[in-house]
Image 1 (cartoon, rainbow, N blue to C red):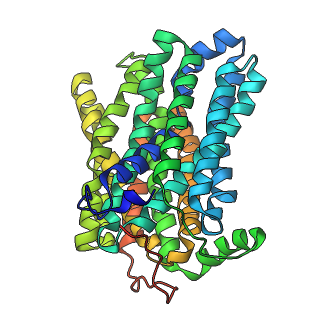
Image 2 (cartoon, one colour):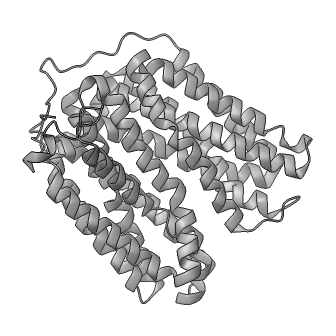
Amino acid sequence: MSNIHQPDNTSHTGLRLQLVLLLASGAGLAVASLYYSQPMLGVLGADIGASAREVGLMPTLTQLGYALGILFLAPLGDRLDRRLIILLKAAALTAALLLAAASPSIHVLLIASLAIGITATMAQDIVPAAATMAPEAHRGKVVGTVMTGLLLGILLSRVVSGLVAEAFGWRTMFVIAAISIAAIGVAAWRGLPRFPATTQLAYGALLGSLLDLLRRHSALRRAALAQGLLSVGFSAFWSTLAVMLHGEPFHMGSAAAGMFGLAGAAGALAAPMAGRLADRRGPELVTRLGSGLVMLSFAAMSLAPLVSPTAQLCLLVACAIGFDLGVQATLIAHQTIVYGIDPAARSRLNAVLFVGMFVGMAAGAVSGSLLLAAWGWTAVTLLATAMGLAALLVRLWPSGPVRSTSTAEPHRLPC
């Protein structure tokens, strides 16, 4: 393991390129496990003899498991060796995916879905690990690169699973996912260094410290609130897109909605630029630019009914690229901000930020569906525009400089 930090093959981030790619791939493949099932629900339900209501519980339990894992497991990254946590979660996620592939009934599949969600939080251990290893001058870029892997996992997982399930069956997709996580686990075992614990708090006190961190740090509150607001619009769009495209005037199937993930992926690929800009000009500027881009993209999307169906599709694709870039750029900048608050509490700070983000995503999914049913697609885009504006106002609100509460130098692993 010692050879990974030798200067040869070191990238311009201060870390070896292979290590950065390992972290990005691990985050992406772990979080992709949350979304593989979504395009396969129709085929899966018919094959396993489950009702639409029963299979509909799969993504719900997966997301619930992920939220529970972030809240109750992610803070352990400050208490224990992150390398050990990543390896244990990789093994558990592999087992959960294999259980899903071999499930004889919907009830076993639902249990596997909850387990997948909980163990997929290894992605939330990988990101703080990347921030810890990166030199301070390049932390934004490293986190941005790893987050690009995570975001591509979210956006491309639906496309991949739909194609694999159609060609080879839904069980094959879960087997392939399990193999990919097992490979990441082996690579992490060989390539990741150990991470000394940064706190000796007991587990109960560790969880209690989440509220204490939120209360003491206005920068953390603003980051969680702004990212949560952006997530409302993000989730409202993606949770209603397939229904909207299925109706007038498009009459498109679920495959077409899944392909919109490629548009989002184009935005995610530009996310490392946000990390570099955060390193050079400060993350506060990036949060404002990103929130503004989200607001403008959704505002432009609300004009779609005024043009022809073909022009509407082009506008939707362009705006999907724009708002996705804005959301991801702001998230990377927010992570750069919160990781600088207290280096000894990075896992807990990350947990608070992502809990706020997933609360926003849940609220967006519910409110988007209700608005689409009651007032149509324009209402969804207006909600998303309002959320982008609210996030921008949060970021424009004057605040004092971000200060670390730790007087000691953050732990640096040799690069």
